[in-house]
Length: 332
Image 1 (cartoon, helix red, strand yellow):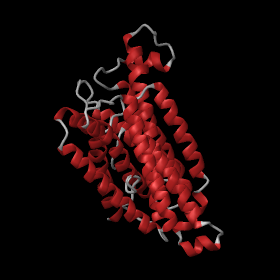
Image 2 (cartoon, one colour):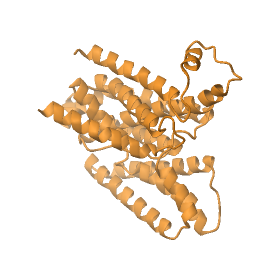
Image 3 (cartoon, one colour):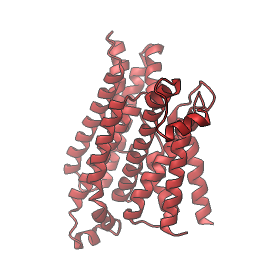
Image 4 (cartoon, rainbow, N blue to C red):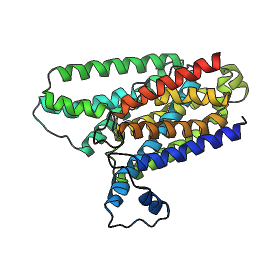
């Protein structure tokens, strides 16, 4: 199958995922309502109007934006580190965001202050990931290679996890439950204003990182080759680290930590398109990340049920077997 046909199939899957994501949920939309929606003829007084525009569509856009951001973050990080098991959360950005939320919820509980709200959680997560990113940048200028930075990121994650465990040990069960629910990830808590802000962040970040496709492609062939091509290796690496940090931090702040997508999407893109060239893998990663997040979110809603599964678990449950199957299929 040609590359163009593969992109066509992926785009078709994306459209199917969008329709199913809007249609299925605790209330399954009748066919007539869906047709009215597609014809822009849905009555605003209909109870389905609120379900679609106030809940399902923001959730759908949150899934798409998260898939795009995490997919590209994982792709570029695996490229500059030249390590297939690196994901956007390896540098400790997710752990930093988690520590910020833990200090807000769990730490506030220990000192008798209740600052918990949707806005405060987003701000705490954003602040935690931003401070972690600034710390990583300061270390980057002192380290001679990206391997050292990778180790520092892992240590930051371990340190943050230890602090969170200590706070959890001394926190009341009710407050601990709030933190646990946040750590499971949730695409359904975003308003249209949140979606707009996240969209702006994603568009700007993706726009900047697209200009790094050529130098990162050169880096994949080795640093010596990249230097002969005139690539400023430290500047390229630093730009990619900052942008992937912004993408990961902002997504974590708004929807919580979403595991596995950033790790799996680059591998799936390479296996499907059988290339290392980023000009193919970037659009492929955006589509695959969006499709995976949309299908995971659809399954998490347990169509026809009022129950909702944690999206963080669904991404791993769906993504891990799919990636294992693709690897085995392409090795045999």
